Length: 617
Image 1 (cartoon, one colour):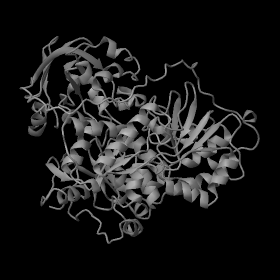
Image 2 (cartoon, one colour; image 1 turned 90 degrees about the horizontal axis):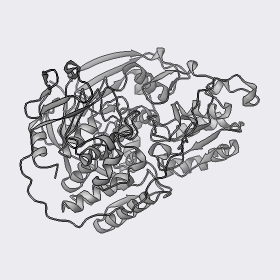
Image 3 (cartoon, rainbow, N blue to C red; image 1 turned 135 degrees about the vertical axis):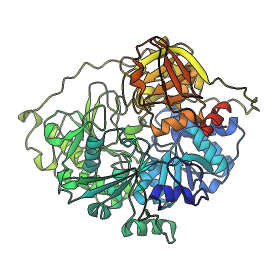
Image 4 (cartoon, one colour; image 1 turned 45 degrees about the vertical axis):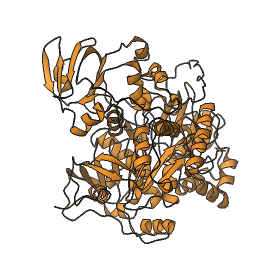
């Protein structure tokens, strides 16, 4: 029986003849990356656990979250990482270089068939070149730096085949928004998607990157797009060598095979709050906006910049609208300069920043304020992700056209005249609330100490239930990105669930030993370890969900934080405050109020080993 692309790559990097779904392998990692927000915690783990660096030549820092250095915590963490890099001979792609996932491709660190991990949850963007990339928490990255390998559970694979011709106005961003509208955030949870079709074969690298970059929003481990000749030639030019791409075997086995019709695809926009709440552009035309953002790892490539320039040429951004443009890398920025795109952007009235993640990571230009309505070419519009206002997701072309019009529209329908001359659908906007500024502290690291051998940890818990009846609770709701620079676990607890509506007071009201009961895909979104550690900080004993985001599940396991999942959780008829008994060894979950119990999947052998060890280290 043959193997899928992901299975073949994982097998080849673990000296295994085969890799089948459910196998747990020790996978060698070709490129091991920490960003500026996660890097300080990686350093902390390395130092506190007295670890070394297995191979500095495969180990990298990328400073892309806050390349402007406008935040004291980011500045402190970046400086700390630079010092650590000097000590260990680690290369730093500093604040002038751009987004790390793109640099991995540009610099030849990753190529078809390679493996990579990063503190960036969009490391699976590397599926665009047929490489296996994963976003992971700081404990995983520290392990990869010190050992060169990480454990990984082989995912099931799904084969998506897109038939027919892609309509002329439909961009790569529209394609992936159509997928999100169809499948939502958890249909492919924990699965590897392989994308096929005649039109897919001819997609440019930039278009492939746009699609692959939103695998995380689909809940998938990765979207693997088999590299065509153009992609292989580009990657060969970056590594100065020949590449034999990894392709699925003809008799590869898939968990699902789905065919889709590209001719049904239309221009799409995601409504604020959920990337998968995508609807046809037609239904949102005329919605008034205050600002637009173009950039991010999803749409900051040179093809995106050229498309935006075509829209903006001979136009001006509407008087009461702000347009912010951020190329993804320094190479793209320079191409914009050489090709005259920068002049078009500036003449139109746009603000152009140095390369980086921009508003998506809350560390650069692109943020919006309370009550502000933004059209963004980013990949996420979770509440609070790009600021305190509302964010619609769209293609760069639609974002640029909307900035000129002053309301959501398409490039072919940019009106003449002023905004007030045209009928608009104005959203109901609440008055903005003042928010306290972030508390600033320099990161403090305790000197390395020899850790005591942990005693046996409990396998059963009884506690009060916090019943949060909601699916797709993302990491920005759990631990907002404005707190990412915090490295002290003791400080993290007070921010737990602080960005989840109706649970802003959770941290103040929760008691040690409480148990969280929730829905599907808990912990969707980013790779931030703090979204697990904040609950440990509060003394929450465990979290029980219908399912977990793939990265979140890894981070909880590696932090020895107990989690259980079961699709039958609704049978327990929970109410807030119920007494719950959980046995991680047997998988039993009991609602003591009504005596109803179910059996969830118990801890695996490796999960129990890490748990009893007190964590990955």
